[in-house]
Length: 197
Image 1: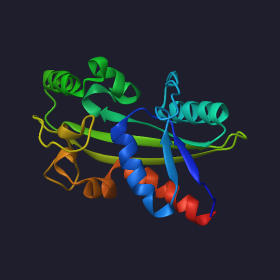
Image 2 (image 1 turned 90 degrees about the vertical axis):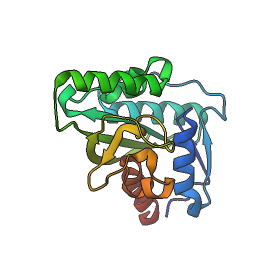
Image 3 (image 1 turned 45 degrees about the horizontal axis):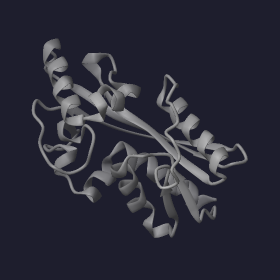
Image 4 (image 1 turned 120 degrees about the vertical axis):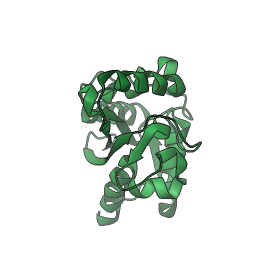
């Protein structure tokens, strides 16, 4: 197993940090965020989730000297041709996801699409300061419901219902969501990698 004692998470998103720290608890890895180290956000100039995750992980690993885990994830809505996709966080005005969800629901309604199918995608990039990077991907399919429900989670969780369920991500406990979410699936692959090396 790779011995990572301290892992830098390339994020200022407290919800994301809490979710990932919880999954790494059994490994006694100290998780610190870019915000904890007063490091600025890396500009996401990539056109894919992988490009953005890789860019963030490699940049911050070199700057900090720590092994760095970065994720890029987003909501891809079929009737909007995969949007907001890599622009999911920026789609919400000033990262106000409540407004972002309202805008998205209006946009989807305007298409007249009845299926409202969508998926969440997540790509994790693990970079060490020496320039080695490993990629882990996760995805969960579902649909966008017409109204927001639930108080848990973050981002677009209140409008996304995963396949096989009749409730949104925001109505699930953290544990329930982690078992099926895009980030949970990518993290599972990352954890398997930790255990195998």
